Every structure is written in C-alpha cells, then in structure tokens.
Length: 178
Image (tube, rainbow, N blue to C red; front, top):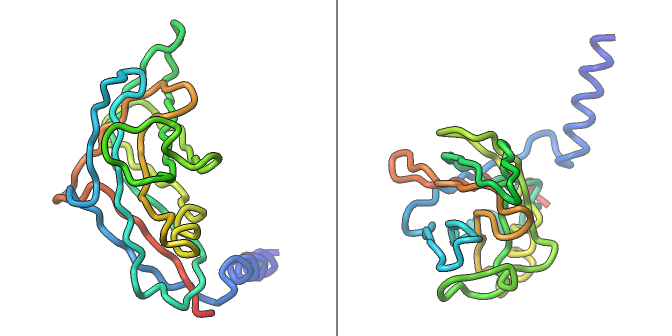
C-alpha cells in the first residue's frame, strides 16, 4: 500500500508539472515595487500597488505556478455590526496604470485571488497568482501590476504588509522547459 501511495504521489506530481522537476525563481519585492495607498474612501481601507516584472528566464518556458508571499498584520473591521475574525485578503489584476486612488473599476473583472487570514500579527500568507502571471506573459501590455488589500467583497479587514530586511513581498515562479 505504501508503495502504491508513493507511485501515486510521484505520478500526480509529474502530471502537474509535465516534468520530473520544476525549476523555481523567487523575486523579492521591496519598497520600489510595492506602494502603500491610504485612500480618501475609508471604506476601502489601505491597499498596496505591486509592480510585477516577469523574469527574462521565463522566456520560452512553461509556467507551472506563481505564488505571492507576504507577511501581514491583520485586524478585523465590523461590517453591518458583524466582526469576522478571518478577514479576506484580496489580490487583483490592475486593468490600467494606477495614477492615484483606485477602486474596483480599475481591476479586471473576475481577476480576484482571495485568502482568508486570521486576525493577528506577522501572518504569513501565500496566494496563488498563476492566472495573473499567465496573463502578463501572454499579453505584456496588460501588465499594470497587482493590488493587494480589500477592494471588493465585505471589506472586513485591515492588512499591513510587514517588511523583512526591506522585502515586502516575494513572487515565486515555478516553470519547466517547453
């Protein structure tokens, strides 16, 4: 039984990547790549604009996955007298260059990637951004970056990105040769 499980796991991993091993590139995003915005519309809460540069090493490769890693301090906001202690962190694809405050009309419809996060300090969060990165690779003119925060939905949390050695976020790209 144990051998069958090992073969199943190996087969599943091979099917996901199309190769025995995917390669990885991790890009650290600093204050030059991530901009905090405190909008006049307080219903939105603070959000972050993220510049995404696709690594040249991905040229001619097949993207298997892309993941955004952040560490955040999370607090809950009452919405309609209800406080949820696992507010939802959202990542959206910007539909145009951000020149100031944005709202949900500045993001592509159905581009939302979400993750509930428990209230507390120094919460590590990984969000699958593969679809967004695939869009940027297919159509570089669509790459206006990402926005992290609470733009849609309940807007029930406040998220503060934490810096570790000047790094505010990381994007890890998994890829295989075509």
